[in-house]
Image (cartoon, rainbow, N blue to C red; front, side, top):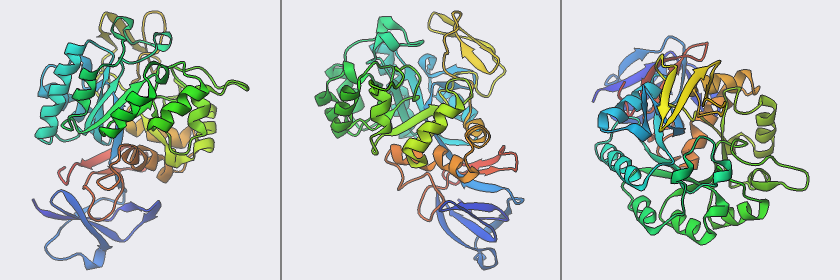
Length: 378
């Protein structure tokens, strides 16, 4: 693979924008950063036109894209369509997310992810099981018929170590802390969601190793003065990461700004919760036996229940600037470095530094994606 020097860019390095610096790519990794005048002759120069050169975005919760829901994926081509759809919006690594379904379907989808990881499919970094170990009282669009108790079969499936990064969203009150601890010991990242957990139940889960909250504020009770609940426990636990859907519909921007103020941007991350519509003109699709409709920037069931989103990561970053008053460099960190840390991948990706994966995105002044690289390949 050719050695490349990306020049004439505003490079995001350690939270600051740098100009006059070249980013050197050698194979799949970032080889170094040097002044543009010192680029070695063996590197082919590529002019970035003065755009923003940033780490690729990492989406830990993407249910689908390109017209495909992970729940309906039949082969590796379907996974490629999902990853390709999100790459157009700057996502260079994602966890395809499986919404509550049958055990048979979970095994089938896991087999697809296993094959994609084995062949290093660009963009596929693992899998997120959102359910089925949830609380029916906060199920949202999840099929209550498939919500059930966790068993040893699932523990074996996610603990085998062949699915890349694995995130499991569960309701802490439905899964005992000892089992959460076993998941974490097996390398699984455990996140709370679709839950009615009280403060003490959530704190016990965090003590057992739970380290995230799935779409903070959504599908969980609000924090109250004398009942802080799951949200209060998460906001008061420094080790806990909080993902949120920043589409202007799922959560009021002021509510998200309060969470960022409480947690700090280093523990808050952007997710899309995207459905099949991303990268398409689709306005209707089926989630199991439910008809989902896109209108007014929202996806809803016939009764008006929110059903994932039409959000992409570039839009989430723009919204973090426009709706949440975050500096662009902070918004990008919430879409790259923070999710990398949540997944335990900060030593591999999530920032621009020598030795890390050359997963990169070039943005224009409107924060639109112009080019992208995954493991050095455009």
